[in-house]
Amino acid sequence: MSLSRRDLIKTAAASTAIATSTKLTATETAPPKFAVEDQTPFRRQTRRLKITNHGRYVTSFIFSVDYPTHFRLKPEFYPVLTPKGFPVTDSHQYCFIHHQSIMCGHGRVRAEDGRVFDFYRKLNFREEDRSDKWHTKERNLYHLGPSGIQEITDAKWQAGENVTIDLQLDWRTREQNTAKGEVILKEHRRYEISQTDQLTIIDHFSSLVPAKGTAVLEADRHSFCGVRVNDLIDPDDGGTIRDSEGRINPSGNYWDATGERKAPRWLDCAGKVGDATVGIALMGHPGNVRNQYYLQDWGLMEVSPVLGEDAEFSSESPFQCAARYVAHDGELAAASLNGLHADFGERKQL
Figure 1 (cartoon, rainbow, N blue to C red):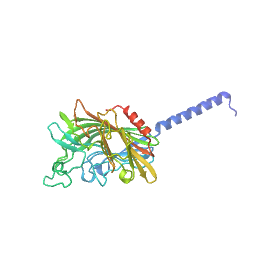
Figure 2 (cartoon, helix red, strand yellow):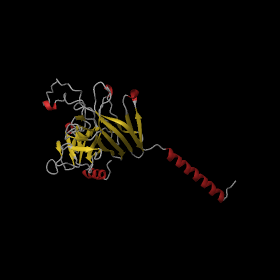
Figure 3 (cartoon, rainbow, N blue to C red):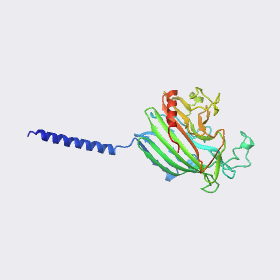
Figure 4 (cartoon, rainbow, N blue to C red):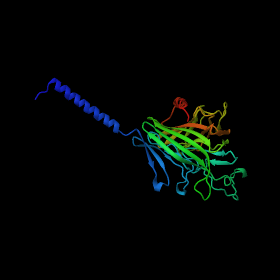
């Protein structure tokens, strides 16, 4: 039987409606670009948020935990992978086990009553009679502990075209024979993770207040936003660190306004993993009160407002700091890094 023109139009319209409905359903049920899996193995002894992009591993955010077999006093992102899947960070390396991939902390936190606490390293409980042949009496590491823990008290996240993780943390002391110490600082921390064809970008925003009264972050080189790069790409093993001022393999402190030690806008460490050139860049937010940099050729890069100067803060005037980490496949031109820095400067802090 032949169909009239009207029947053909009705049939075509119905087919279009079915196709549109099918397309909408597929769109509605399609998995988001990013996914976050909350993993709590070993009867919740440890915890991490495993982040993937269309099924490809991007990074994991590992929670801090004060337990012997999973001991970690600072949370960290580890591993951190480029879009092609190459790892560009390292953690708990042969030297300085407190350098934990992408990390945050501070070595000298002074409470209102004058006590000073370490929230960066992994110092043991004090051994007053033990000498330290590598440091002066005042810096005897056996006398400075114990380091405190950054305990995550709440975690929320959203995943779609990017990932946002919002954390509430208590920076608290560790005491012998008890699971809970004294809360010294409270922090709101946010991470935003995104990817392009060449880049994995992790933006970090922190707002820190004392639990009581006022507190001071005393000047210390163990501070605030840092990354330990993959051992394969650090300058000691054939990689190259360069900065926005054109320096190649700088080392030490860079926080002056001018001159040889002028603070850069960004640092970038790149090298070979197998046959692939990969790297990771670090840049402070232009809105930070200061951006002071510290780096070493065995693979540490830090940016902080308090490497060389103290910062006092209170609940009415929080300490704020933000940094951007950019893991990349291939070389990144200085112009691209300048653009990433300028783009980050447009982002609002907490």
